[in-house]
Image (cartoon, rainbow, N blue to C red):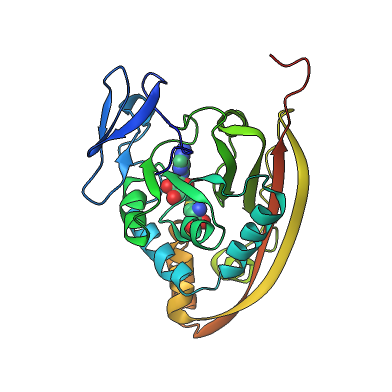
Length: 279
Ligand SMILES: C[S@@+](CC[C@H](N)C(=O)[O-])C[C@H]1O[C@@H](n2cnc3c(N)ncnc32)[C@H](O)[C@@H]1O
């Protein structure tokens, strides 16, 4: 971890420094680094369920599916945006809702960023540790990020959450948010197999506040061909699996392979440079 990445105590808001096998703040709040390498920075008052975030079986399915490389073009597009729009040479990047770390690792390795991965699920952080030892993996909530104000160059949110004020707080002026959301055609063939009726469900990007200006948007579409096992992994990594009727699972079981549309939208927002009237 370099000096560039500035951590913040989730309890009192003071700076957090790494000391031996813990992170500590001047108020003596201390957070142990787990055996696997992640640090839990989610105080109980910010934890709204016993096991928050994605379930372990969902994370395992996601790891298996993503390792097959079908979603690599999404990584490449985000890295392309980083290189084109970030003002920093070696950017500090916070990947919010990083899951088991597939994208975060690529942002470090191929995007040249210094990364911190943030996810509210402890199992996600545990699994991410196996992907990289040089990334700081944290258990924390996107609504109270354990990162000092104005210390990040890039925030990525890949199929995750958009937290306008918190992202604006941690970014330096001129820093960027790169958000990936599912487009209206995303996995439409899979949804047709699962549901009686498929409603167009384009998750519109949340409106951004006046701290940001939209500087780029990309709407991408490509096809993938999957075998039965791969289809099941993809299904298990999404919320669709839990909503699926038993008879529909039987239809899926009898399907040997399928062609699916992958459709995603990338939006890049830049935090405004400080204006004259700003404090
Ligand atoms: C759909 S997954 C995407 C994971 C990863 N970005 C990917 O695309 O592989 C969303 C992730 O957000 C995490 N998450 C949900 N609520 C969160 C919160 N309030 N703060 C941080 N992470 C959260 C979940 O645990 C899950 O890993």
